[in-house]
Image (cartoon, rainbow, N blue to C red; front, side, top):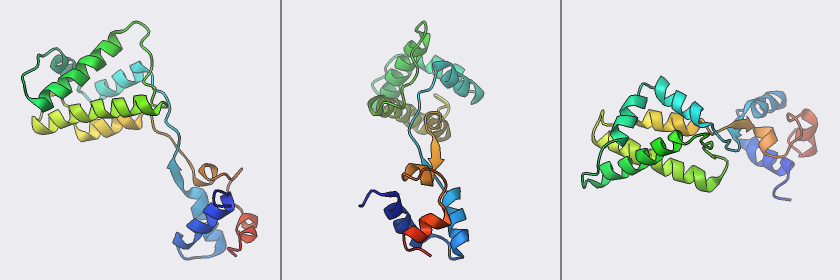
Length: 164
């Protein structure tokens, strides 16, 4: 059964640091992997941009006009969309849990970061800000949970899969 927890453990086992079985179990139980994305409230996004010191720059850029430069104009559309979103009464959250919405927001953030890379200081939206914004919707979970175990891996799990 290729998708069983035991199979996943057996596949991971050879890559673990050399050591005792107990040390390998401890290493597995300390590992985390990407978890499911979660939705993020607009005030949390605004707060993040404020704390990065770029919220005023972002809103000023969004108030601009197209200039025929593809990178600039893509960032402008992205930020105009964002500013319109946050201006909505009871603005809906950023549904990072929806892969389509997550991809759209990622593309918008990428357009703004590309503008900042092309013209530093124009948006303040550096690659680090981009990554931090997207990280708001990302979670981590224990390796064992992501791979179908009901709790941390035990010596019994290792033994049942021929790893001791």
